[in-house]
Length: 175
Image (cartoon, rainbow, N blue to C red; front, side, top):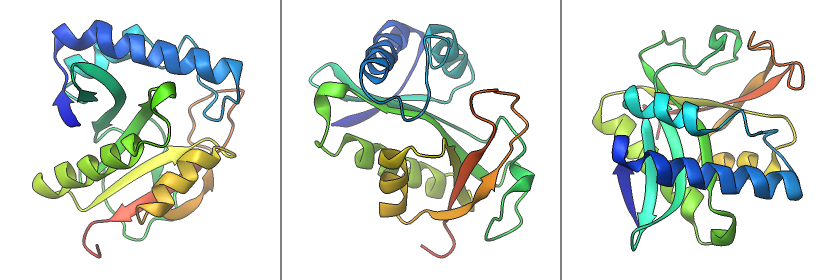
């Protein structure tokens, strides 16, 4: 597997992956409460334009994707973080998805490891993220990589179906 920092020419492949993931979630258990509105082609386009879209590729096939940037997209000041860090001192993982047929191949762990490498290389002090309560696969993945729980909070995103989010943090100074 290799990590690809996505460009415009990768838009269709990554958007198609998210489409397959959303369809699978809608047919099974939709832990993150994703829909055809997010993550979608437009959110992928925006992430590519802002330089934060990544994909996990093997033999020309996309097996996973995520967005990594320093924009929490909500009120992260509300979290019970290990250290008080201003925006820009930490990276945020968004929309981490694994191809449904690639379950149990370690794709999610591989992508989180790459996020940690990028954050360290670029001098960030922490990685933070939020998870929909009850998203057990995500909770297990991040906790297994050393992330600690930082509270359940309203991030002021005004999403009726998700009033609260669980916050997680990996302090890169202590790892």
